[in-house]
Length: 378
Image 1 (cartoon, rainbow, N blue to C red):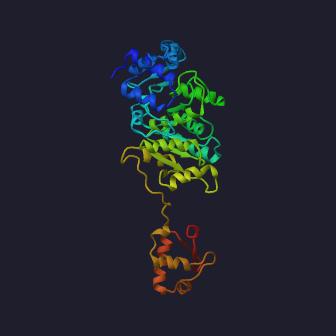
Image 2 (image 1 turned 90 degrees about the vertical axis):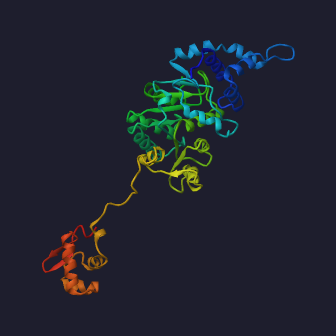
Image 3 (image 1 turned 60 degrees about the vertical axis):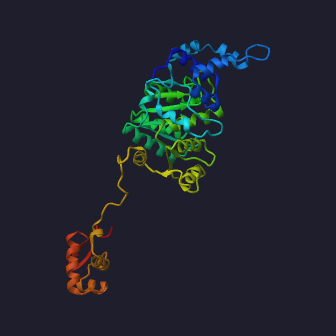
């Protein structure tokens, strides 16, 4: 499906007119078509025949100029129907709104070489801005693991967990996408200007808000739905009970995406929100990158063996051999008869077991007696 120049300009105008995630306007644009909505709003009149406030704003918008300005800044406007459009965002049409935000965007402003239709294999890693060293380390390692396996890491470029996730992906030259609550040409937070410049060079910076838009609280809530919708699953690493990252997890759940949580100390307030996700069975517990890819990967791909300790020689012993081994002294060697008495077994049977324990390296002979070897003492 191709997009006509007039439809694109209508979408540019509506992108400037509406707040990101404005359910009513976005739903009208999706169901009636952006051109019809644009024309209707442009034709609005007051009782005295003058243009309505909305119509006046649209007249002053000059969508061609806005699009040209964005292009000069290296920003492209990707809309439904473009080859680059990430079709997974279309699932937002069927998702219940949250806090009066939702629906499919009229378009996305994108800066960076990574094409959005190439981020279908992606995972979101989000969490607290006031992250601990533990949280940042886990987020970075998970992102690096995903990047090494050609999965795109999506986050919000904020302090703490978001920053660690982007850096983890970039460290292994993996693809990463920063979804912003402001214009893609702005560095927010300002201290992340170098990080965002690197993402723009290697990955993509995405926003529903047009170029020049300032970050606002309501825009963060709207952008969270994009993070969840772009990806196959969302990992929450450290989140207090009222953390915004739980809003992202809520969107992932609403979109039937996988929700995962990294456990922290039970005494940590920064992990209470994650623990509640896991306790309520809304989120799967994950502790490493391999866990995450097992959850979001295709069925039967990347399955992990349950974690087990490395097999020890003791594991293969019979119950009687373990009984004899427990009777062998640690330091001073003891004769077979003494070991048999301690074990409560016959001498001949004990002798056979001791020689078997010697064969597998658990006991050693010292003079006339036997004692535990170094391996047997482990």
